Image (cartoon, rainbow, N blue to C red; front, top):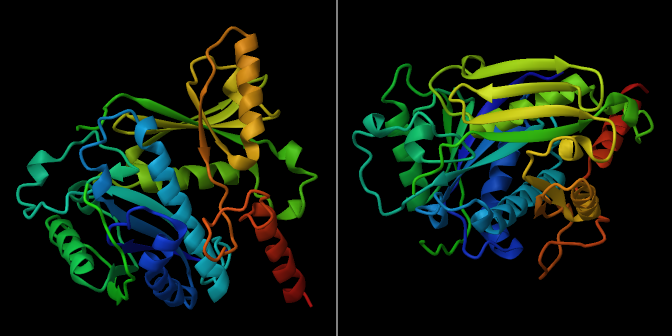
Length: 366
């Protein structure tokens, strides 16, 4: 297993509208430079990308369903672009090899008209959780970086300066070697209080027994390893405290008989978000055993599964779940198109990643 080092990339605000073409024009040169720098390292990288979003400022008091479509389109487009660039430059996107890059994105509630960041510590809200936070909360979270990437140009350097000035107000000062990378072409249209109600995010993870017949099953991590990876990802985009990662979490483990009996519940210490990783042994998981669940996230490829879940809930006399659909990430570029391919033939898939691992293992054993 390669050593993993964290790095940070602070991008300028996204183009509006955030189409496949506009995101590529705005961020492809930047992402290419970042990937080129990271793929040559002897360690793998956990890359946290900070994306300021003026369009979200003043809208976080709204129900999240009202901003969902806009946000998922932006995130899906950017994650796809990252994977396309990594593929073209020969950089792996898992953490098992030196030079691999595991990217995750957080969004900033950002007001570009704000000119002063004074006295921010006295106004910090201890109940704020990601993945949409403000710049002071992120800056005053003590994290250490291997590299810090900023984008050349007025807006990119303004964001870097604001981050560094805020981060260096607490001790020890921010760590990380600064790198400036080129920017693309972007047109931004400028655009209340977030809710402090506790939220539960349930993640169904398929049990080990059901994965024995998967392609390249020998490269599928155990349930415990996959659970740890899921929590690691969510904590990196949700938890922003001055305490260390372990100090900011409370973990409870369950191993009870019956369906959905094996689970790990991880609660952020501010009590606002609990991540419940549940072992599932059927297509439904806790959606038909827990009436309190209110929403489900599906992809275009698993849309039918969401419909089946709601049919079963209605049969039981329960409320149907609100369905949120995310785009399937496409590894292929479609000239002049939307970047979407409804037959999913070129989707970014775990099977393809495992196949590549098998090929690497076979080659290295020769």
